[in-house]
Image (cartoon, rainbow, N blue to C red; front, side, top):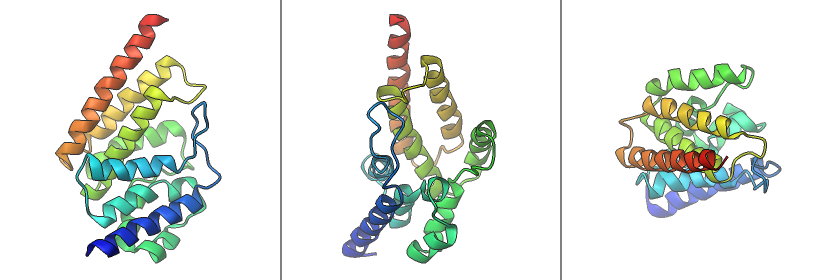
Amino acid sequence: MNEPNTAAAILKALHFAANKHRDQRRKDVEASPYINHPIEVAELLAREGGVTDPVTLQAGILHDTIEDTDTTPEELERAFGADVRRVVEEVTDDKSLAKADRKRLQIEHAPHLSDHARQVKIADKISNVVGVTVAPPADWSLQRRQEYLDWTEQVVAGCRCANPALEKFYDQILNEGHRVLAEESAEE
């Protein structure tokens, strides 16, 4: 795909996600705009993972639209094609299940994801680890934050071999997160 079409494809996904997530906020103290998260996921894919594939980048931007908005898989396919739809569906949790089941299934499903989806999943976990470390949800205890980091490690273990550069960056971010939380624990 030539560069203008790639840029247009990425911008189309940004516009779609911004519209779908427009009224949503993150759970941090500042209640930052939710759209910052999918933008960060795509940026991590490109900057740290060296991803240039439009399907993976669009899926990174759109990864929470089915799960967290009124977007249907069919709507996503009409707008972005079957490949993007498939990747987004691969990383989408079934919200009808209990949270503990969703978390367990992420670990179980990770090794069976496509390379596109594994890369999106790793970038998503990097973004979330940073968030839980430096701008956590207001009501999360230190223990819950530490448990979250440990859980992401299990999910990412199943995503290995998809993008070594992204995996290396995840390891750095995870180690930094553990260090920061250990310092916070020592201060308590």
